[in-house]
Image 1 (tube, rainbow over the protein chains, first blue to last red):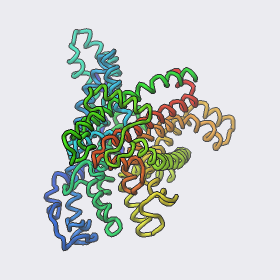
Image 2: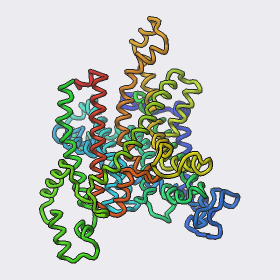
Image 3: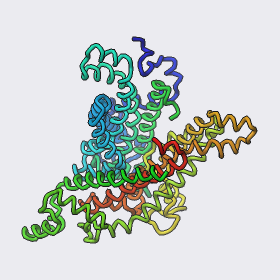
Image 4: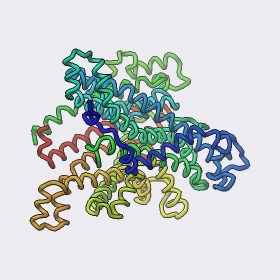
Length: 285
Length: 306
């Protein structure tokens, strides 16, 4: 089978290079990965090390991002915070895809009552504003990093479920699926070998687009005290701490907020660019 | 149109019952004994049992759900564990503040977002277009509570133009509205631009241009009406996102709305308030989505037959 016959074209390198969004987004996310991997080497000091004599220092040569109320180096905390953001994205998106994709595949492939039941359930979850559902779930499970990620994953499930169902319905009509059915291929073989394989690209684009939202929601929940607890250097929790000192030391909130901004920007640009590259039909939407 | 509304009206109560069902059972899963919480830490076992009977917690869970639903229809959602006041009264006092903030943010985001998006489409590839798109992509990436804090730092602390906290005058509304509207404004501007660019390619727009109609009339009278359909859908969907975002914004600015009531209730495990605020918010979102569907059907008759 020719590559062009598949649902999505594989981009060529020159085309990819022309896409500014992919380049800038890719650079920002690569930087995030690099900073996370080398955090202990890049951070000037231990992010939890307190030095009360140096509390509330403005940005300087010794402390490029300044210090917080306990004299902790904000640059070191922002650098280590990158690791937590990566964990948040990987776990929340992984869980949401792990549940949403099989549900979407099942609904789209088998149709009928199975489809109705799954979509009905997903629609009810979708009726809740994401943030509110997350608060409700965290209030049941208790505030912690993992519980917060479960909450974010639950409200993200319908996004993957719906997308995967639509993709399955489209791919199911392709001639190669009909051919596989004609030679007596089993359902699970068709689902995994043909449908899932061809749905991977748009699902990964969706995952990149959702990643930014995951970071913003996780930061919001930590800001409200419903996610990561101090003294863990999570960006949302750091901004929350800075709120109490906004009149005397705005730098406490400024730098973690910029870290969130650049990370989410990276995921959004990369997601947009990849979508344009992989699926020309969605351009500009 | 009447049949379309009737069809939608049939689905509305089903969704509302589904939502109330989920909220009721999730809130029941919150750890801790509500009867013990309401009776107080020093209450005897007998007093706790009496409270349990009074709250109906000794009956089956489905019976409890039936009582809850009946009460909700009558406007009785129980009493707050903290204040002892009726939940409906507590929420009613806060609703005007949240709606004021949410609608102000939605209005500003819609007016500025649509204008910016249309301008970007009209002057495609110009500096106006690039500026709007740059704002759109940055605005959609910033955390709204961070925007709020930075705005507070500049406009309240350093310049002293606007108050830091409170909800007494219109000046108190400026910063919360600004920080809440940045995200939807960015998305609406982007959607308006792409929708407008799509519509101006249509034959009827080209026909109008060929007839010699001025560019201004072509864009405002012919193109905008159709370009607005996906934008209105987005605005409607964002009402829910804004209510969720308002929870954080209200906390930052100590704005006495429903969102802050919810955050405080979660901290003190005041489950009747959690249940009531979430129910109120989700039902508002469902209702607004219903109204958006009606407006869209009125604008685009084809949608009534989908």
